[in-house]
Image 1: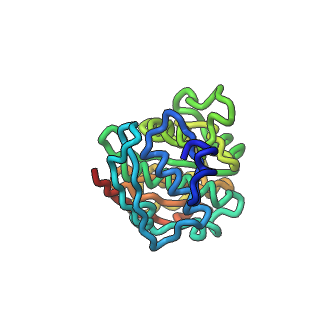
Image 2: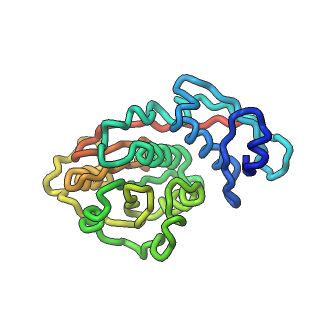
Image 3: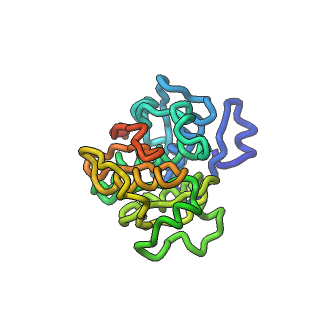
Length: 241
């Protein structure tokens, strides 16, 4: 619900999600992620979502979501031991955003990208901009990855080459960054390309966690210490109108 007063009148548990200008489907995804993070929805459960996609107060869409289908085989608990210097809730948010990008693509085409999370000062020292930084000049609260508006901007910017650099508190510092970590010290990973090599290098040269989206398959991989430590398959959401 968007109103705190309305939430207080409703007998059931509610989430406040007053994100004007954000598509209802994206608001719904935010609520589901928040419920998973707080343990209110668990793996193995199935939920039924009723909402309007047209902006009216009338329900016109039913969406049935199985948590495994939506997010693949990953939960906050699965990510706890991957990067001790990156908050697990932030890594969970980034991974699920990456899964969405891998599943949805953009403008009808598949896309690939990299997120580098944590140890941001060192990461920026070992990277250079490929484009003018689209996040430069904005207040920090306008660059917070927990905001669905920022997530939607990231999905658009993922069309561009280069990596996103994200601080430990969830503030997006830059996009379109070329990573030049110690790639010469990385053993090529069979079957994976330049994007994964860059993620491997930056995660070995810093304390950051790198998350890649494969353009060809939509598969998401998490890199730590120079190695891929988790792979998450792509999936398809099922929506009924």
